[in-house]
Image 1: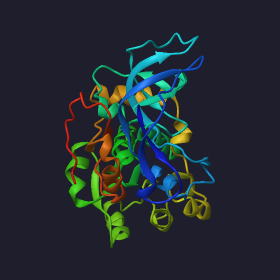
Image 2: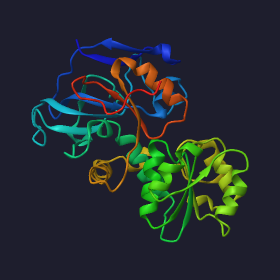
Image 3: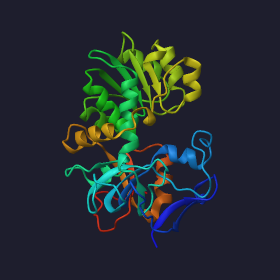
Length: 318
């Protein structure tokens, strides 16, 4: 039988299991995709642990994962946009992408660009839409100076490049180890940690025009202290800080569309944007993938490979 990730209760990794499930059958207007690669995202840890149960209420058992890519297996009545064998990528609003088969509406799929590899395609939707929404929220224009926290993570590595393409000067807050990547895409790296406020004042003596927080942990307060206007601060994680400061909280939902996904997928396929990968784990090692993700030290995305016939260019780092 096909396998899928299932959660039977809120909690730690012990609640995450790979179980046998019935192969989904498409209803009218639906397609079933044979998944080749699926993404992992920090938000899935928060959902599993119950921190977002009011935002994403679920009845147990339920699956996990939003991003996936694969080949169309079967189509339901009335579907004309896709056919069996088509290569696609998309997202699961039911958060059930970490499975060998996913049932989806065609409205949540796009054709995979031929030059886009399976692993980037399968882990793209959440970070692509998050990055686009976060950059859009702070209204960057040529000559602006913007600082971005979590600048080398999955969403951050795309956001810094989108911000840079707007003509803004981009300061990427990340670890020292991420500095070479940030410099390679035209971003000025700045190490996080003690003394960051002063380092930002030195790096931007005339002040910051905007701040994008992709990490949490006090960056909204820092941006306010540095004089950034609340309407030009956006966070995807520190909702309490944003409410206190009057900042924005635009994330994946604010730009979640096929158009956004196609725009970023094409940019990566053509080499206009670089999408780094931290590691690719076999599906059976999903626990290891989330242990790595929870360290919050990733450079790019962590991906699950569900088709052993597709050769992975990276190996797990643990």
